[in-house]
Image (cartoon, rainbow over all chains, first blue to last red; front, side, top):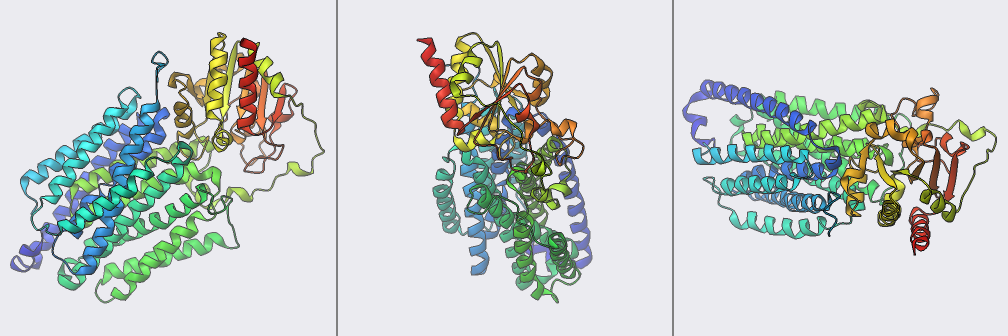
Length: 115
Length: 463
């Protein structure tokens, strides 16, 4: 991903690009946190357990990072670490979403007394 | 560079994740939230797989198949085991982050040492620290919840100093690595080792009743380690999704701490279980006890019943018997409500899920703050396996270790029925005044057996 610009552009340009990338990442992080805090604050207290398993599944977005490490042509041990990471995240994705849905199905209103 | 269409799909995925959480604000729309989350995840995974340079599809697919094979049974655990499953999946999340950080470090170290700038090295350090602390910390929490490990706090002398200095050393390693990632490369394995060790030691002194806070905190760590991974890989999707998870964990931990009137530091370093009971030397006091049949008769002749469930109900798996009682009472035109304390159980919202499983409509699950004003009207308050959350000492006794903690005002009901195994004080070893009140009747026995008998009497009378 980064191989192209490392030697050609010189260190100074690289530093500058890296700094601005970093700053914009911090920016994104800050905004996402505020959105997150605001959205989560409104979540019904009834649903805190499913919320936690849902966010569990969402944080398994680490699978993207794992794929980026596991996927390219790399020395063997890097691929192995990446594969384990993909496995761990995938477990969270599958179990997280399935159990959240299973729990949410149980929350019923009074009228809808049927099974 | 990331191709534009992949960047766009990442933006779509982020939006879907936000909607997914937004729809959780109401049980009506909540399932839509799951579908939206699944859709976002699919988009994210597929577009990442299409990234140029990804060639090891066989490894990725193999890992995904294995992950699915392990994941499906993990999603089918009984609902009482949900806290340990959640802790376990936090640990997987931490592991993934830690491994990716480690892989990236060695990759850059061997192939492009220029890439290891101070920025990148500090985010790698944060990722590895957070990831591996979450990994072992959550494993310990899961072990305690599953009772493979003793759930009481394990304490020893100078524990906090040991833990903090261990963490301090790990941070120093991290700083040295940031200063010169190549010269100090031999420290990297130690960084991992210390993070793993610190995770274990951090959770050892924490007792079962503090688990709701700890799980929330670890949830937050798992999210933050994904954020750190996003910084390392310069991937904004990881940052946004990780931040959503991190803020969710943060809010839940704050709610839990408030519900126990304690601070983060107190939960993490306080070792609640150490508190010695002062009530032990008091003279033996008498309690009034009742049989399940008496309890059934009292319930039958009331108009408004509030049930306070606690961890004891979960342990005894009594929720289905409780549902029978609920049905019998509602059939007689009696109002029945459940008063849910935020920290009842072993994770946030634990009681709600158990009662929902037993088909109790969620409108009757009432939060502490909403039920308390109604408590004086309640004819009967049935306390089921709850203890500290109904202890009036939290209101009245400034010397009590739980003083100041918000409680459900069970003692304000006209009559209190407390189902309890024995008179042993609860987790924190604190005497509960509630049981000695004149209006309190104790029904001794296993929660499941007692509620079963009460339900039997109630249904027998009806026919």
